[in-house]
Image (cartoon, one colour):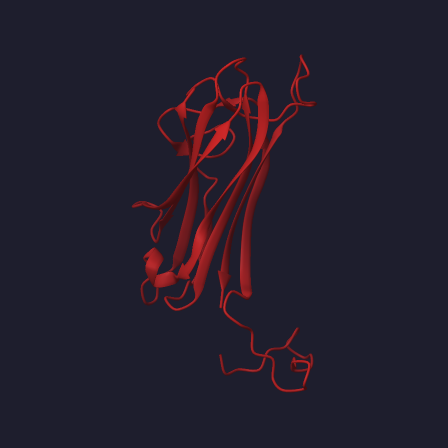
Length: 186
């Protein structure tokens, strides 16, 4: 990057601690888009589906307009999962998919979380920081889309996207959190 950076269009040019022009390093955030919400008790299916409230409901995808091939992109998903069984550990996976047209999706990464019997656990999955070209961004691409899917290899339909009021409490549950972020970086 060879252009001066300003906090506002009429503000002073940013400088580093020695007074030279500020040059952000790799991974410095340029833009961030986020989707967050709460959800009631959503059974996690065996076949992975788009994370949201309810699970499988389209519209919880993220996008960045006018992405660039040489800029870097990464994403993070965080959500709460409850295993109500009394004696079985359940296995839950998160998947990050990307697209440049919101029609054709490419799975980019996944991870697996073990959720012990009778517990609620916060799970997270990060899409690696890679150049836009690695995620399918082409010259003059209009958007880069990202979506997170969730599935249960073990316990599909019994393990849920939800959080308890208090661990081990009986009765009503509070609403679990979902937080998805997509960022553009140097």
